[in-house]
Image 1 (cartoon, rainbow, N blue to C red):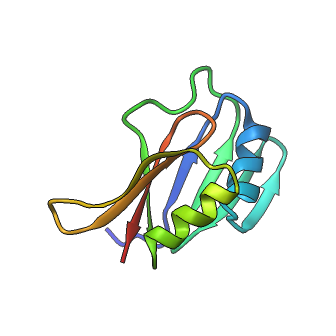
Image 2 (cartoon, rainbow, N blue to C red):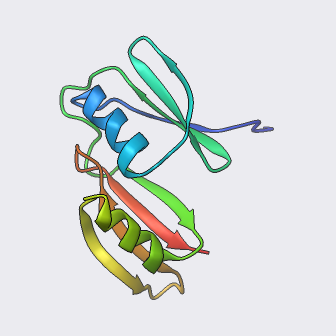
Length: 113
């Protein structure tokens, strides 16, 4: 299988609130918008926030985003009122991680590379 690109689809409870969160609080650039959805650039892939889910993404869903400096990223996101659910720390597997959450409580894992 040759994967040409990747895209994560989220169906939030409140699409406009989630669109604002990913655009304004996380600062993700918009790739394109269409009626009922927004596609954001997400490193080498895309994040599509589309439709309206009854419950939002489940508790086992997590976005894993690589950043250059997890401490600086968390400080910046705190200034934008992004809820930090776990402060940066060194994990037993050797990575430095922090967790934040979107409006539906979707875990966003920030990993320093």
